[in-house]
Image 1 (cartoon, helix red, strand yellow):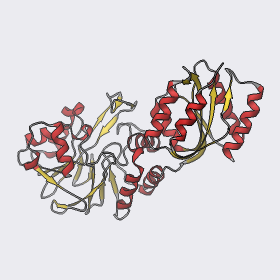
Image 2 (cartoon, rainbow, N blue to C red):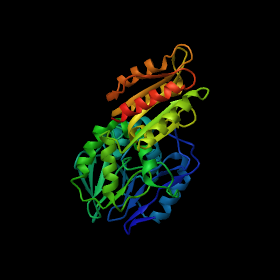
Image 3 (cartoon, rainbow, N blue to C red):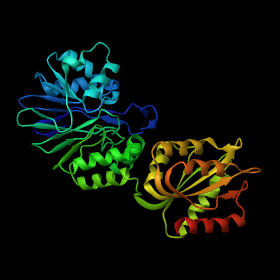
Image 4 (tube, rainbow, N blue to C red):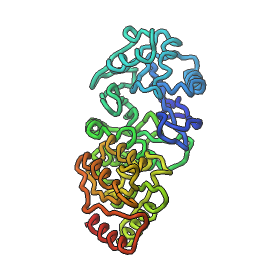
Length: 384
């Protein structure tokens, strides 16, 4: 793939992987993006996951066509981008690896016995590396989403090599929309670090960017303002859409029925409502929708004088990802001694700027006619 006549794509699709980072389902796979810049000096921009070693090396050798690279720029030390660094250094004895000082230290943890001190060029904020016509300018992006991360702005062709920023789940051969899987990727991978993403966006705003080349997902060349605006919304923890997300954890169906009934009440008020079964959907999808919508109602059964575990896991993940700035209602279910509401309330109270709607609505095993009236009141209070 050609990014420009002098910048080539050498990344690879991984359609065989089931879980990214051993936790996130990727039904459409993932791409490990890397690039080569050709000039008086030649620079490889990142490697790939060792899962695709053979395919990546084939792309590298065919693209170089006998030429020798001078630099290997590493934006991020995570193994899905950096697993093949030691092999590159071995194959090209004169090549220099360009990364932050912290990254060069980290590499020693992954590649014992490799001399990164003599082979490395440590770059910091604003440093420049000339390849000839192409000039690389480096900007630090700590905690987006590891502390050693940099992004690179190529000045002549106005390309931002954005590391994990603006990435998405899904192989490049997958023809799906960017937003959903980019949102799920961002919230679950970088969601905790909104302030750091905001800092990176402020740096990017000073640059004339025509193309964004991330480490995962498609190269972005059109309507860049749309993607940058979504990142701004997500990293400020603002709702992207007005609506009510209703995740539920139901044992025998009573809580599920209550959640669906509440969703219908909300829809009759002209507001979008989305339900999700936490027992049968991976938590990463639920986290995505919780951040997407302006309001949420958590519905769960009591269990072992506590909370049914799928809801506990969801709320735990929400807190890890810095969930905030939302209005949330609570619906609990219990046959003899409901406890879920107390636990859910306590977990939500531990999150920043979460307004909990009063009172907690209690269902006893199955919804009654009286519960329907209470749900109408709850929806009105939630949406007021």
